Image (cartoon, rainbow, N blue to C red):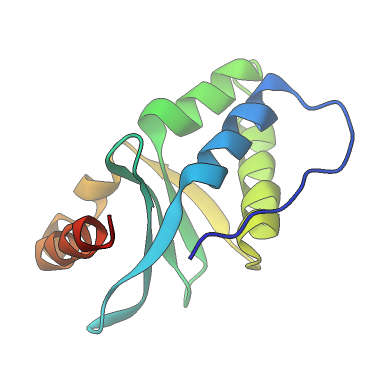
Length: 129
């Protein structure tokens, strides 16, 4: 389920351009029937999960290494600006509402207890490829 939008003409910061490129190459997949509110966003270029969205609570987990940390660094370490950028661009790009961006060192560590779900997600991803 890829959703793409055209960015309106304006001057974008390097952080916005960077995050937009990640959004464009990341696809969301539902993890398992047992967890209907969990969506993983997989990046085939990095062969990793970049985001995890709980549609019930609005929690939107972002991988710190390579995404959150880069965006934050590109904008002088401003945490509030980073949250706003991720929230606004993600909600627009994926056409979702009311997310609460948070970061985690590695999405896979966020849900180690969901190992079955992640194994299933990887099998689905490989099957689609």
